[in-house]
Image (tube, rainbow, N blue to C red; front, side, top):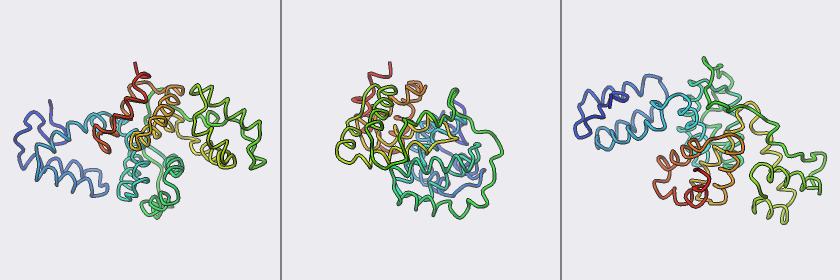
Length: 284
């Protein structure tokens, strides 16, 4: 195996000072937030074999896997870091995605989608991370790369809600039920409960969801949902997310990537228990 970002991965048991220096120089080359430098230094200075194997594993999902892989991982990370309240991480992913071609408008669509899970607290963390920079945020210098076939489709989110009233009308229920049955094949129990117990909430929360991703590929919605539900270990949520992903053209390899990338950085192997129960039969 060739060197990866300065590290000789053919020799796990020995790590030279030059390798560590080269790795740190590489990380600093794009002048992003310093956390990746000090986190990398902590690993390589104190547990170099662990650091090298981690670099090897990271190559599955990060920079050596190509720009599309970086974009997908960073989009998921914005969601997770808003949930966790890690402002340094939010800023780092904004910089990474801008460097890889994502516009400010698309980045903020990801923030608004993630706010539906992270709440106003998540928005507060996003503002503290990047809010002061937004007025001067320049257009990216290249086009963003997504998997083939991924594209914006704001109409795909819409089920036909009547927004002239806050009441969930019978027609709204019919349209909402029809949307779910056409896309994933059934009406989730979460929506059934909401319709029965707080129909206004279902209508208004669904209406928010429908306007989050307008110029960002629609496939990012289930892709972020896969991250969220792998962390929360929601079997029903994972299955719904995977079915929506498949309905919108996300192939099994990318669904697996979304789940295992999450396990790599957030849950360990334990995160795959719910995935096995929820989606294993959908991936063959």
